[in-house]
Amino acid sequence: MKIVRSPEAMTAWSDQLRREGVTIGFVPTMGALHDGHRTLIRAARLKCDALVVSIFVNPTQFGPKEDLAKYPRPIAKDRALCRAEGVDVCFEPTAKAMYPDGFQTTVSLPSLARRWEGEARPHHFSGVATVVTKLFGIVRPCLALFGQKDFQQAALIQQLVKDLNLGVKIVIRPTVRDPDGLAMSSRNVYLSPHERAVATTLYKSLQAGADAIRQGVADGQAIHTVMTRIVQKEPAMTIDYLAVCDPRTLELLSSVTSRAVLLAAVRLGAVRLIDNLVVAVPAKRA
Ligand code: AMP
Image (cartoon, rainbow, N blue to C red; front, side):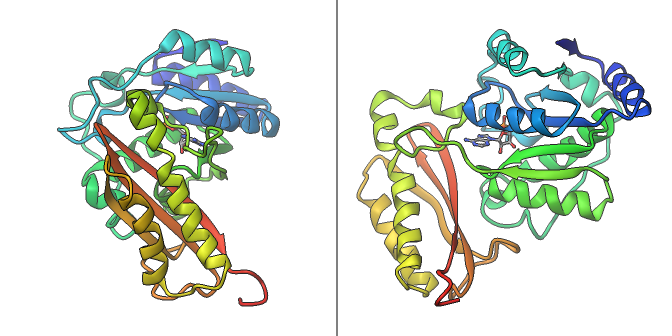
């Protein structure tokens, strides 16, 4: 496995392979890799001839009070995982190489980024959209894989690729969970043993919302109440948002008639957990 740090060297490698007709798959990450990342890497490996994983803790998607400095960076372990999964290139640019003096362009999606994570983290999505656009320009993949775990981010990237004709096929893979249902996340390492034990409440609340929909509850507010009651029973957790939304627009649904995404963000100690479930109304009611 090659470790490439310079954007120019990365592009030169990709250009050469593309000239030879090789298909390039790409999994962008911030490192601290876990089984969620591993499933994206494995899926990409099966779909493409060559595979690039980027490890870049992108400073522009962190707010001033967020955890940029202490974000976990176990680079040796990350490289070992990539090597074991047959990654061809681990692209590890520096912040200076990505944002040299004079850098000024940003990409933003005002409508999709407005609510939910965008409200809690005002500059987050323009940081994400800009870095993904840059990474696509540098790596020039045919295909890129993202996780449903970050539902709003996935929606935004699909829109970005369409709006800017980036020519990269986007694949979204299901959320990988610990056995008790907690969605895997690089930030779960910050949870104390007690917090880790109660963290599963978030998934339970999403499941209860999904069950309500499957059992015939259509009223968005009623579904929201079902989810809220479960989280409120856990004193260590505070709700940032729980929402019953249209999976395409991410706007609130007053009534669930076909499909919904249940979006959730809570705070637990120093950690902010996000999760979601997509639910379809059973066929006989749709
Ligand atoms: P990150 O390193 O957190 O920026 O995540 C890199 C990619 O991995 C993103 O596309 C995430 O949505 C995806 N990802 C993170 N956690 C999970 C998970 N538990 N299951 C599936 N994909 C995930």
